[in-house]
Image (tube, rainbow, N blue to C red):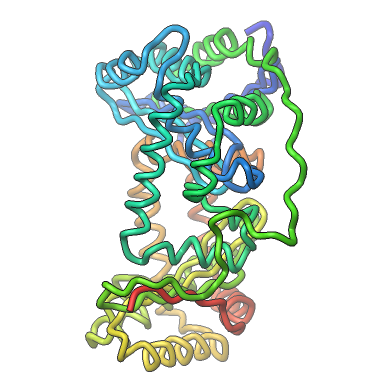
Length: 426
């Protein structure tokens, strides 16, 4: 660990766990929520490489690159990578979002060295041109499959309309046009641009040997500092639309029997103190199990789905409303949603209704957090985007501190405005 800097330990956590952090010489940060009582350990590489980081010629590259990480390295073939993941016997996968790409695994603590070696090696892929062409077809099939499923690209269109077709509004999968035009060299340049130590956090949770983790990651990633820095692409022309993108508020699907309606407006960011109140507001108004929308539209058989929720990003947020119903009921159902929303804008919920939402959300969060694999994602994402650690008790305290006045404030802020809307299906 002689090459590491800024090593810190936070031991007085109410949960009995220990938070540890180290910054390596290549800029990569390693963080861990250590709990020796756990029977497993989880590890993830969190990379600041998401759809919002792409330029038009790179649209879909973050997700495409995620696929290519499983296609072999200088030390392992694609078959070796997948065989070894199976041998370790845990849960492993990867995903790409608007703001990050994550590679993760949960294994027994005795396999820590092996999973660190494997995931670290995977992040130095060969990016073979032949594998690139093969995987291109896989990505195109994934896009086609997704567009065949309800709500038929409606959420992507909603993002594009609300945020614009770039940044947070850029499609994670890209478009048929962007994927077909993409080259292996563009992928290599994007890899060297984004997969650098300063853009990556290694997070671990559970029964972790932190000193061993830091030493091994330091050794295996030291050469990342030597990765070339390609010339950045020019800024996109804001007066044009990316190829394959439309901004019309309807998505045609003549074979559908139902109507899919998506409303999108502003919401709190992941750094906004009001995010906890917004989550409780979403639960009160549109929880799928028991909420005002549930009793008005689902329990009465007027809709199949009627829900709402805030979606948080690092510096912005969105408020979604989602309705699936018979086309004949669309207008009346939308009026009911507007009426119920206005009621919360005009008057805060009663204390009993708020406490029910708090109890349900805190219980769900506590049960979800029992496994190191679940704690990993909040830990890594929070540190990558905000450089901070929030333990379980801090988050629960934020939820339990929500008041009816806070609910009234966020209702006026996010429910009063008329949302942008996208309609798909019949």
